[in-house]
Structures are given as structure tokens and as C-alpha cells.
Length: 196
Image (cartoon, rainbow, N blue to C red; front, side, top):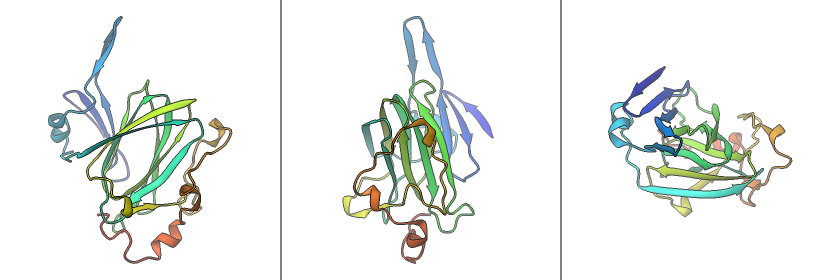
């Protein structure tokens, strides 16, 4: 379902809570202007989250960050790309969800200006498709270093269809190389309890 309100177009996806948000872009021969976040427009769509932190990263082609989540303090995230392009992925970790363990991916680029909203309860990651990419996101909770969790980027049960044909190699952090499988994570009955 697509709804246009104010300055944004919201597309609600098949996994409950996930949304693609497209701001209205006003441009001419000089350039463009857009609102990247408007609380009133978001609230009019039932998206009444409160953001407490903004983050930005730069990565080179083939870098894959993820799949990350916080265990006890899950974050909602509003993500976008301001330079380059990435393939962005959300995995539903909400145990009581009908789509527990399902994933959704979208290409975010500086050109398409799409934003991707993930409510609390998802693992998140992205792979850089351009030579470099700058990635920005808002979060609904602060980052807690001792609370971070990870999921294998290539978990066989989740089976994310990363566009591997668009990069020559995958570049992972040392931590992301040893993230556990979905089966291992599910075996811990205390994990994902706060995910919604």
C-alpha cells in the first residue's frame, strides 16, 4: 500500500513495520531541496517513533556491515545513503512475529533518495555496491557497546540474496566474520525477548 502525505511517500512492506519512505524532492537547474525527516509527516503515517541518535559511516566497495542488532535495547532505524549505493537488509528477529527469520532488502542510493525504516526487533546490515558510500541513520535508542549482537551475513536458514555479482570480494570486520548462525541464536530462549 502506498500513501502520499505532505512531503513523503510511504510504502509499507510485507514484513510488518518495515517501510520505504521517499521524500518529495524539489529541484531545478540550481540543484535540489528535500526534507530528510519531518516528525509531523511521519506521525501522520502512524510512524511516531522518537529518534535519539544520528550516525554516519563511510565504506568502500564490497564492505558488508552486519547483520547487527542490540539484544536488550533494540533500536529502530531510519537509514539512507547520501553518497554512492548500498544493498540494505533487515531480518525480522521478533519471536512472536509471523515473519520471524524473514528478510527484506532494498537498494539505497544517493540518486533514488529512498529511506528505509526498520522498527526495533530487526537485525540490520548493508553491502556497498559503489566505489565508496556514505550511510546515515537515525536510531530510537542509544548504542550500548556491551549489548551488541550479530547474525551471520550468509546464514543458510535466512538465505539473504545479496547482489554478489556487483562486487569482486566481500570485506568483513573481524567481529562479523564470526557472527553466529540463526539456528544458534534461536537456541537461546532469552535472546530476542525484548524484540517485540
